[in-house]
Length: 275
Image 1: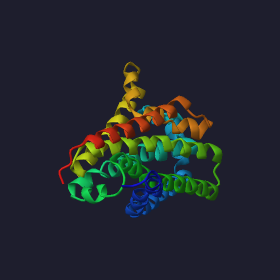
Image 2 (image 1 turned 60 degrees about the vertical axis):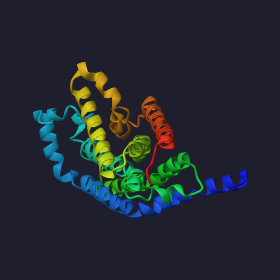
Image 3 (image 1 turned 135 degrees about the horizontal axis):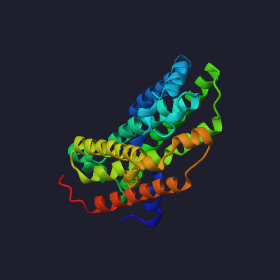
């Protein structure tokens, strides 16, 4: 029987966390290259579209984008980055991908019958959930800050004005948003024994939340619909343009993260797994 000190040492080793980081180094590398490349593309192509954006703004051609916060500022460099990079590609596409990966992290172990190997480690099921969550965080951090540095370098290269502190704030407040997606995905992963099913469901959840918040932005009568969307609490335009942080929104995202993690631990602890 393990002593308390041995137990603590096993927990502090974070072996599952380290293994998860190793398992996801390829997706991390691919996604980092993809999103830093897209960040360079969006930032770099602004000068070619600047005049067209100004004309579109004056003619009212941007009005169909009214469901996107900051659409009226699209003719500026900050507004262009907000629409092209952050409101769609960042919030939605990266959110879908991270959710897809997180939602398969436990279910793939069950489906491939490797869960018995995972559970043979001298850690509890709750510890497995915590370490799997921690193992996905480096991927989010690397993608996030490499993309930020790419935007900074491209901004300098093309000679545009951008407050780098505001840009840093934008990427800092991205973390609670993506962490909450990871936590929800992890919870979804404990509910199903098939990785594709859990991943598709998580993708649907992210897309649905994006749609709900967009509807809330367009139709005042449905404003309450946005409250059930994570996107509602993540406001990249306010941070990028004004340097403002929605403290309450970030607190909500942190609460969602911990709630989803606790739910995942409680359910997985009681889950009947057929080996």
